[in-house]
Length: 262
Image (cartoon, rainbow, N blue to C red; front, side, top):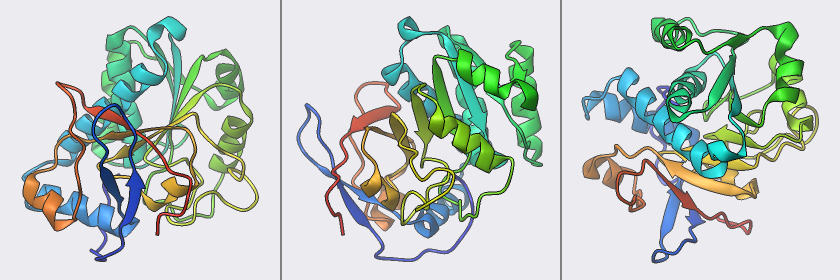
């Protein structure tokens, strides 16, 4: 999620939404617009990275609850990348532990930001285990659900090890997967790679943070929107039609239309 690039206007894509509520359209935003929006949230909106990551991770945890309630299995493996998408996964794992799940973390390359160290300490204080490289395959076979928090909208490829191998293993598993913001290995604009790791990766569920990204047009599965923190002025600047989140929910399930969106 949060990376600073430059605004590139008029790069929106419409995504149709289907639910019991009245029909509405959501806008997909490019990686550059998503980064610019995050920068505006911090520069104009007064938000800190910690706050945005906390709310994003909370949204991810609520999406997990809807796709895979505790009654379906408590073991949740959260696979985290070195950037802010991985930070969202760390936050989500903390919330999942409070909900009654038994999360474990696979964090092969920890980010250098001091924030990630604090998030890790919070998890260790809750006795949430961190999986070693040698134990990942076994953990993958024992979990009942997996959160893919490896790469988000800033991913530009090519994949570097160990992530190519990790994504291939996730791709091959029959365990249901929720991807955060984008399926890892997918290009934000053009979707899954044509070959190699991730070419056949289609997670069970996807949570788009703040707004869908263009790659959602290649996705088929359960789709959620999360990130209930946009102010009206920022939403207007990016021409976003925000979903009407019910009650205290931080996520809302929306549909995906596999037809062309451009």
